[in-house]
Length: 276
Image (tube, rainbow, N blue to C red; front, side, top):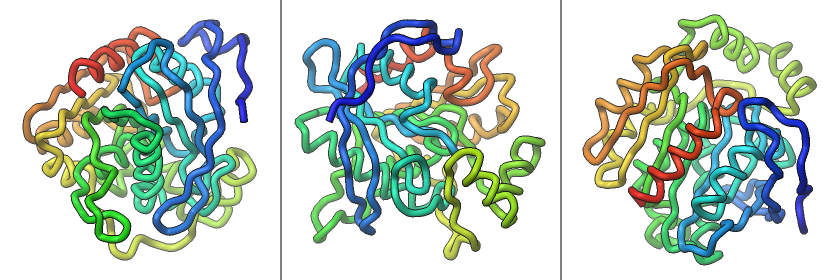
């Protein structure tokens, strides 16, 4: 099933280039949640697949994500998807916990359709999940070695630790997660269904998972005007990780997909090619 393709007037951040065609895919997680996904083939033949993980309340169908997909498809095939509780995927969002299973399903799909090298690029919540997934070394379904192991990981605008409330945007996010009215507003306003209750147990924090990633290459990208997470989050993830690793502090860059420029996305694509 072919997704919508063509040009449109998008955000100035990524210009008005035509979007690459993509093809709808439906995935299933280990815990049997339906995950809506899409495969955008590479513009040039190759063996690199890039799995794109969006931020909280995002979607593969939102214009910033689709523009990023288009740019990254110049470096490899792109598997984008909606986390549980987002868009057309089933289930409810657990805001970074069980989402590791959603990303794992997307990575395994990239392997299954023939990509020999698979990298993950995650933004905000997706960046935190990408770090956790890259550090995940448990057995996969049926006791087989986990297919979710990746060749490179890029974490953009991600939190290093849970429960952070030090900025006004993050206090608003916690209101949406923790209050019935907030969850209703997220469902009505953004189409994001959030599971009520608390984590039990609390999942490994991104900075703790970062210590388990090596020898997989890690790139941490963060803006110096990020309104959600200050720079210490990026430093905490980077400092905890073993080599090989890189840290890019981007002047004037805000938060996640909506602030990403085409040049930043192209630089990330070049890094992925060189390190996966």
